[in-house]
Image (cartoon, rainbow, N blue to C red):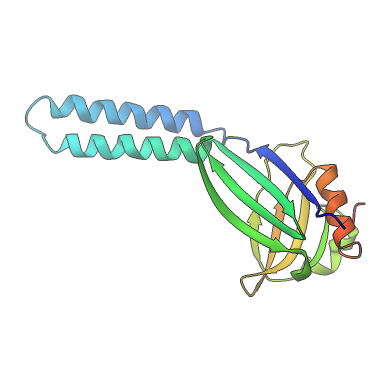
Amino acid sequence: MSDLYSEWIIKRKKPAWAPFAKGGLITLTVLCFLLSFTGFLWFMVLVGAGLGYLTYRLSLEWDLEYEYTFVKGELDIDKIMGKSRRKRCIVVDLENTEIVAPFQSHALDSYKNNKCKEYDFSSHMPEAKIYVIYATVKNEMARILFEPNERMLNDMRNTAPRKVVLY
């Protein structure tokens, strides 16, 4: 039997206020450097450098993509920041999964009152088809929101047919 492999990348929608915040931070950075040239406020160079670094880090955080990789019964979700930095967010083993179903599915009704940690790896787009995974991650129950493509869903269904609901 061959190993099932599929991957999918989605881009997360930027917050509506992100361009305004970035513009404000850039303005504050420039003002700090201008004040440092007056000679009275020499420490403003340090404040300006800190604000510049903060602006850079936040712009990376606002330019997010999520990569879903499904191999051998494991779903790996990575966060790609600014198309240059990658960080492993979570690894979900289908053996430790209770259910995978669409967000509004009635199959999830019995899980609605569960107290669990929630992870959101969706794009936040209005037309997105979001799926929910209830699984044990790091010895606690977790609710994971993600947007797989059809191939990944079929591979997950072939691996664990009783745990994956497609309607």
